[in-house]
Length: 140
Image (tube, rainbow, N blue to C red; front, top):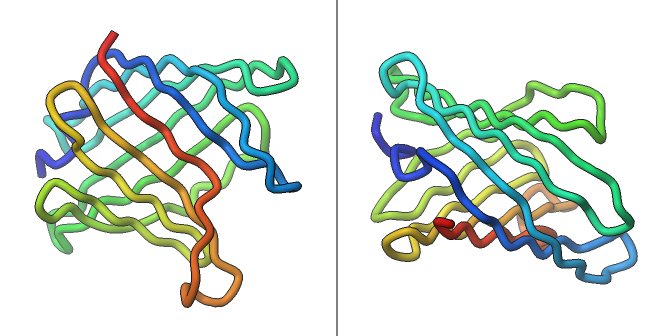
């Protein structure tokens, strides 16, 4: 149940995001994460200026289900319509992997005050994955 306790607090996040044309873009985000419901839920506030000057505000709702021992991770942001379909998964050995159809999130604890997150997409039911977003979290 405490798998996401590492995320609590403030972070500076270096982002590398791939655009539709395959070009990688870099930008910095600010993240603040707070536990709720005695640690069963983690709320993560995200704010960044994307390439091209677009201010993006986002919110991750990460909730633990003790009946299945799985985390459900939903993402909402100011660019797109709300979609509450979560990626679902768990941590093992300091690494977390979470899936939804055509989408995978990976979390890795990279050391004290350092976390790596990556997003990948699949167009062939998960046979192959293409990473399109990498975030390196660091304590400010």
